Length: 253
Image 1 (spheres, helix red, strand yellow):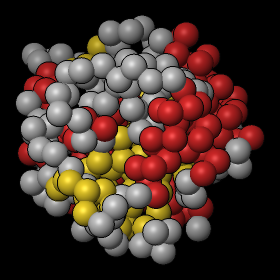
Image 2 (tube, helix red, strand yellow):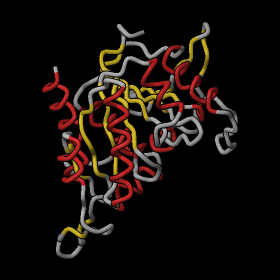
Image 3 (tube, helix red, strand yellow):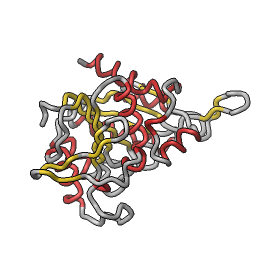
């Protein structure tokens, strides 16, 4: 398995609601557009959203010769999520922590990913059993942390970065999502959540700021309708995320 997947990037956040799954999906699309073979493992077992973002939530993953076959998106990105294995996607997953954590591990080990240049793992928010299990049992090459401008979130994200450092997993940097929005009339940046403190956070923790992503209603609509792969190629920070992550990976090698 490890020989077939060249690079594994985990995407985590200190808390929910900051757009971690969106950033995971966006990164996968960016890498795919750069010509890389890409897969996405949705490790957020109790709150999976990756299938909906890619518009594959009506598909189901098959099991052949005891190996799970991931589904493919319109552009060939391989996706696996618990929602692709259960009959009704709207049913809650009421499992205890160890079972949830083991499921994420199985998704990596028992899935026929084939040859991939990058596997993006969308972790659940926080520093739960799943995150710990993934860090301990899957050979992660690097970690990307997603945050938002609120002070509380920036305090929580420090726990995520400190956890990754204790687990000896290189942190590529921080992506601040929902950083601002652009006025449709004057194109001025409006900081809806107040002044960002992410620059102070990255300086204090000695990590890099990868990107500040804006709030964009058109992009939100694409994700809600399962059409994230259809966004325009020249779309500012959204289009540059993959290149910035690739630059950081190249620097660390």
